[in-house]
Image (cartoon, rainbow, N blue to C red):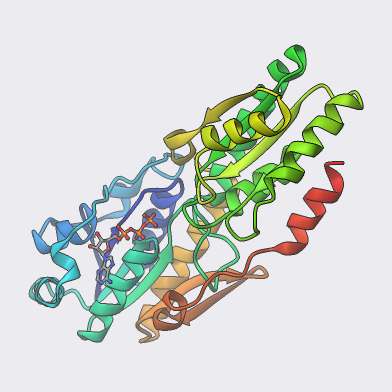
Length: 319
Ligand code: ATP
């Protein structure tokens, strides 16, 4: 490859900018031309493409969001839209593409790869729901934000001897709830991967309050349902009122943690090197600290395994 482009797609996540910076600077380091595509596949189809130089990615490593912006694009779901995307890339002399996004964005990258464009996909999502990588870019920051919020809630809940239900993001994946719940000492963690037993959650709350516990924190992954519904059901069962906090999009904003920046920097550089080696249709990830490239076909058809060991540990430690 001589010329590559980079785009961000789907929901944004902290660390996407660090990944864009890494792709651009690694490509330039290796003597490639590099372009930025605005607004994901929408910008591709609309030819919103500009050359990137070293300075174009200056002062962004610490910023949340994505300077390339992101979008969802219906037209790109059609074979005609995908063909148009590939044609536009060729017209600009671009033979390699790095896509930073979630599951849907991976599918798009796969389609372009089958149309002859060399593509690499990087996991840019807070949800940590992508298989063949232990972590996605943004997950660490999102978990930190949840932990910070729960620390604050704990202070006030303890003063008032109240129970708190915290609803967190993650779509169908419970990882944000799991890691944040473990790290903040939550009493119960409800995730879509494990059948929810509300009766035992309610009984446990009651027992703990009777035994002198002064607060209780229940973390609910959005994939399980609404925090308000859970709180209402618990109240019906044990008569303990809970305050509900839905953290929402603040989980997707703010400055990325050093872990996310390091991960993004490593993955961006890895993707560029893989393109130079002539690979295509690969999803880049990190497994046990090692960078790995797996066929996108395999990744999008696999479900990320849930970490039961951590889940059971959290349960043991929250007695
Ligand atoms: P997140 O998980 O953070 O929301 P995502 O990448 O899964 O990110 P989507 O909206 O699912 O977000 O996908 C982003 C874009 O990727 C879509 O708007 C569409 O243009 C493209 N895309 C999604 N699915 C496909 C597909 N099956 N084939 C081609 N392109 C797709």
